[in-house]
Length: 330
Image 1 (cartoon, rainbow, N blue to C red):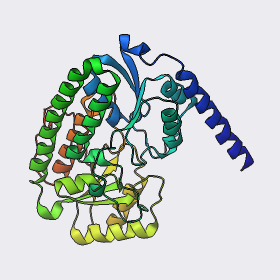
Image 2: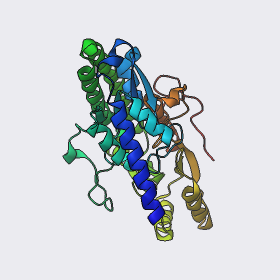
Image 3: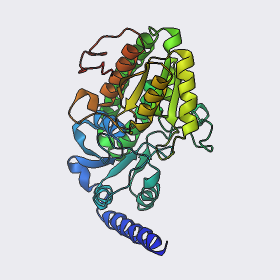
Image 4: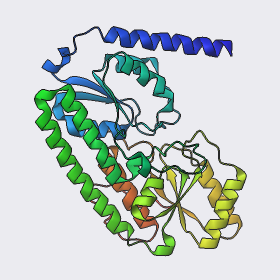
């Protein structure tokens, strides 16, 4: 216990020193060229890149397959944040282990923004067992995540007012594209037979998706992957799967497939064939430089994969025909 406390104190002092030291430069020093922005998740970074264009160098700390619930910042991450001009994070306790770092950065005078800060709190989902904390996975509802774009645009316009018109125009163009993606989700998911509109995944990352697009959602684990699924939880899901005749469940790229495999084996033991309908992006996007490595591509992949696996109709290449192999059934 004493060594853990000592570690926390040392890290805290290190972070405080870094942020205080970084504040010594003139506030407008970086605006003569591209300034630097650090983001936490790929989804946040994608908004910022779309809005900032070539006016900023954008870095995200959490890459492909990284679980933000469990993420611990490295010393290098702390240095990146300290040297950055602006920090953006998702919020709603998604990056819980970075909370103290954000507080220290803000107190040092650095602009720090949660992109979800303007969402209507009363409209956020707070599932049972989340102890009053809203579900942070709002990016699963494209229309809700689109609202976060304005937070970024306003923040960049305040930091760099000379390019305000550019940021606002970029934000509007991006939101237009997101509106098309939202409509695509509504239209294609509506083709899934009603009795098959059940989405079962490794953890509760898809509740906003289900609410926005009329799907019943069941996650084996809770909102955070730090929670553990018990045998009773798995057995109850198996009962529902067998009774409802559900044919497919889904793994996630940033979460172990152990519990999904247990569902399949449990259903098989009861004489029910259950397949993996595909691998979904939940808390992280795809590989950098690919279509699925963008927010648009991530959701396009998820929507199209789910529709195909559950018996609906959607173009194999997704909304823009850019997807690779979608139907990865086992």
